[in-house]
Length: 210
Image (cartoon, rainbow, N blue to C red; front, side):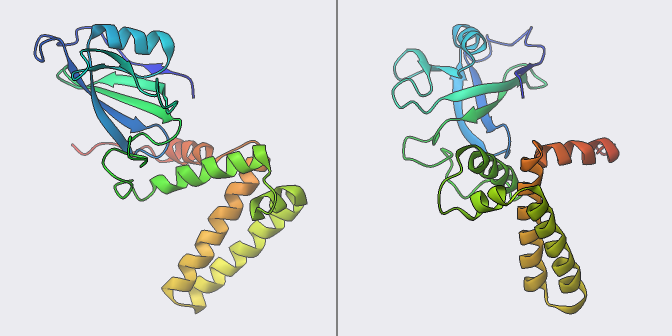
């Protein structure tokens, strides 16, 4: 995903004495990572560098997240709200966002439930690239696309059988196995769950309620 920038003209800098609150969101999972503030210079530096930069109220200077820790927030998209006085930034976090080591400054337990699928997608991608020894996912990739496709077929049949003959826990377990093996198979073809979501969205556009 390349950077996506919406119209950032007409921002209401005066309302917050030159500062705008900025909500940082994980670009894949939707997890809210942190809240910061930008002035015009911080916004300009963010757009120029691709690394999210804030105005630190305590240090009274520009502060690029990760400048000391290396835990950068790489800019993916940025948009303003309807009143032009708040920004929403979607970013790719390199390492934990919070200085306490959690993925979010609001804790690790507030991630949207379906957001885990994005993290699974990312984990499978990293396994495909790095092939760590002893990893079941690595063994699947080493087995080739036919073996992966066979596993998808097996898990699909087991999921269908669980739907008609077993309890909810068994069905959920088989469905989880199916989604995992499907994710691996997609990655072997250079695809991802995000690509599947795009197809679903194109078929079933969700319209806001009137």
